[in-house]
Length: 267
Ligand code: DGL
Image 1: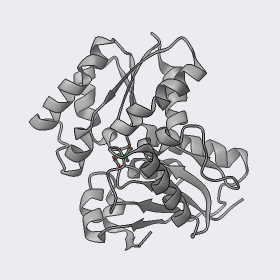
Image 2: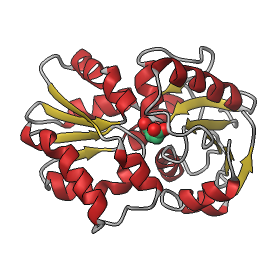
Image 3: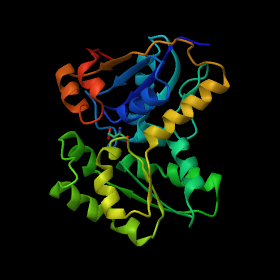
């Protein structure tokens, strides 16, 4: 039994997709979330810069009592690859849980991955999936505009601008006839409806934030580290930029983050 919180970080808001799933499957756990909103986006930065930011985000969370850390950011997870920034408590990114699920559910062995430029440049998704199953074929595509479209709230299913961008980005993935698509950036599940419309009903969409949350549950269960509290867990949010800006953006992801306890904190 461990009553400490689960620490979750992201470059900004996208990691809230993992928090939402954690709240659903582990309702009694406390969550401490750090969103590096002052330095978002990570996805257009160099590997060295992303690694430095990730180390600082982890150090921030470790100033709080956390029993596990989730890097709920596709970019950080991809740049880290198999490297863990912590040794003494469990850690997961979103990459391996999503890659495992994609390899498990594909029927035709053709998997698509979309993500930020840094994620796609890293080649980590291809590498992870080929390690699991060397026969799968992977088609990867960077979709740099998606993060901005989501943050500006261009998320309605009928939004013409987002739909146009999605049609363009997804064309090579459709042409590759994938049956499974990893939404390899934690922002993308917010425009899942648009992506689903373009990819068609037969393509399974994988949300890495959700997969990481499920992985975290299994990991804490196996180690006997789940809380035994019967009370509803609390989410506490820290951001490196303005609280009001976080609340405004967070409402696209998670109601609780728009109204709950949010603190601005220097990293
Ligand atoms: N959180 C990032 C990711 O999942 C997207 C936003 C960014 O570029 O920082 O890749």
